[in-house]
Image 1: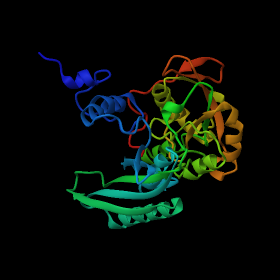
Image 2: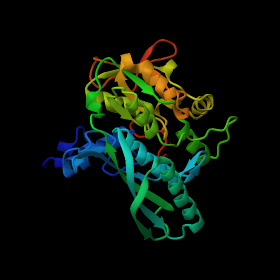
Image 3: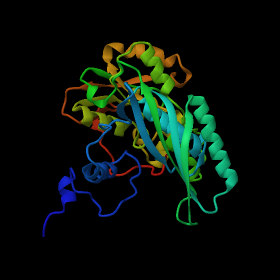
Image 4: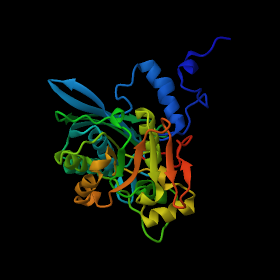
Length: 348
């Protein structure tokens, strides 16, 4: 029997012969699927493990990204599928240091979808695009048979211009960098979970769903040397730290006591048996920049309402490449690894 060439191309054999519930980029199963199937067949990774690809055209550098959105339920405290589709794409462009410019969108609609709901979601997309200062310039719509989709799925793609001199990429992360988060973590995942499971918490949890491009612009306008940016969506902060540590060939040490987590989110995670470090955000970013600039970066972020809870949560070291360690509140250390799948699938 000859070896399967797909398994030879895979960094480690996939655990299953079929696609499993491993939505997004937050788990080992999805990492295996991307690295073991898509990249070997389609070619090299044009984004270089970044949230957006950077392409040169007309004498300028442009960020280009695409994303699909399948969140269930489609409306949740603090947002809905429509605005999530806009903010998610705008934020991916911002993670490359780009000023978002134009978006496209595609709708997969299931026969029988309530037109009133569709109208409300489209209106949410328009309001979110206006808030971000971007235009929806083209799109497509397909309708499938009843029972062949879960109501509606939305795909968006976007482009944004990168200013001269801006070079933000995982490969630039180096020992001595500080790790900063722009606000409290985990609210989006818990907000979605509360509706999905019919849970009622003493203190309501609303999603952090929103844009972060203005935070990035403020950091750049103040001359900060940003090495890398990443939004902690699927897989949360822990997955981001693992992805960056692996891509940059560095180690990262984080402080549990420094990570901002809303009290209601922390309580909900404790009840549900979830780790807030792995719970998705949709309006937060993680920044890597020289430690000497950390306090100035915090001052810039905290001057903006969405960045008022920004905090330094760790540092980059020259330890074993790809290792992420967390000093717990008790002073002990534990490794933060990628989960096999995800704690909360269909979160965006």
